[in-house]
Length: 114
Length: 114
View 1 (tube, rainbow over the protein chains, first blue to last red):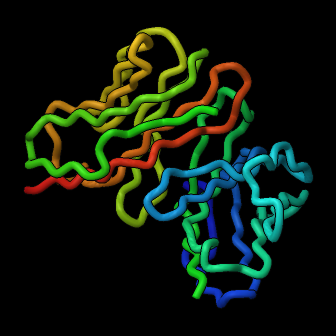
View 2: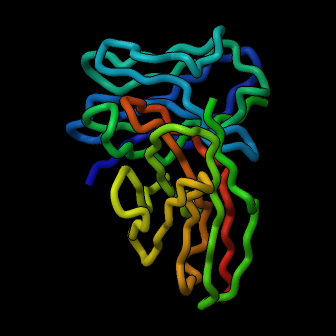
């Protein structure tokens, strides 16, 4: 039963390096969401994508962060020139129909910036 | 902007005790309401959801929640907790008409002592 798959589960990067987090949605799902959980905070929406389209990136920091969901392959959340404040858990979620449909989450990717 | 408040950061109970976790939200319009659970090292799982209809919602594993519109609340309850309920519980809300963004509370850690 392949749910939402994220990798890596844990990633350590030095300041200034790039972090790439991957997400394969549940089979049959074409809508992908990325959320970030900072320490002691709830999950915060970052971006909503469909295949080859960014639908809503209102929660993405303006610089250094980007996301894509190509026609083939997983969705990628890319963080360039990481800083200590980027250390967080990044959760991917997916569903079939966008609004009104239950969203299923992956296990998260924990980024630590040293 | 919406906000979600979970009143307790950490709750400690003995097995067989009753549980109630508070959740209040700020949005005044139509809402969809969710409770998610995250067991240690695992992904968020949907416990239950409310879209419309009977305000008393039953979920998996014996959990239920009651939507009280006048109080903007959606408290989670379980009559008798088990050690295996030890986890973090998140309340989440989205606007009921065409919204896909979930707004999460900060979570409540539940520790059940055998």
